[in-house]
Image (cartoon, rainbow, N blue to C red; front, side, top):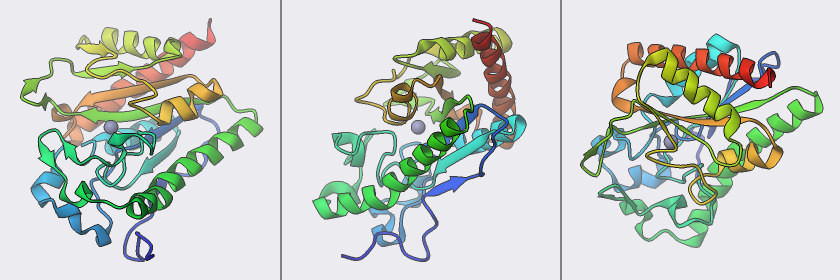
Length: 256
Ligand SMILES: [Zn+2]
């Protein structure tokens, strides 16, 4: 079988290298709307691929700015979640979705087991192997690590407008995430939702359960509403909010 990715497709993993002085490892599961060339845009128009269904608009730019400010490690996955969702278990039905919001995904409608396996092997596996190796190395060096999963969410989903400006998601280890939530609420005066409109779970997430909860690392999943971060100005503003909150939450965690 032909490989999925060709020499003209970029690596699925974007990394800024090791930043050992910072405890933060910032990951972006849905950083890009790119589709591997062989998949021919999955049969979608460029307009559809520009929408939130394909990627987390603004998330990579927020994460880059936060990583720069905090001298932190950044790892991002550079293909659309419509190819394979890197924040879902590959056995979940939603791993390679056939319908996103109201949009059918033609290139996923009749995918073969072989086709699904290639997406896992060439995109999902290298991304998570990169994070695993990075966290193993940090652990061997005795470095404290806090995993930050940066996402963004649409402002209108299935016709319903979302009132929260951002959301903090967590599951088994709420301590760090709640410090981030409380700081953001005080600092911004905005509506920072708690495990809404999504909550973090093994069925709906992969990155935090596997890389943070299973290792006992403090973590937080952050969602920012996309209409607030579609410009460089909004991205910088939210990156500053998030960087301050991460530092304050770390100080609170260390003072327990
Ligand atoms: Zn996301």
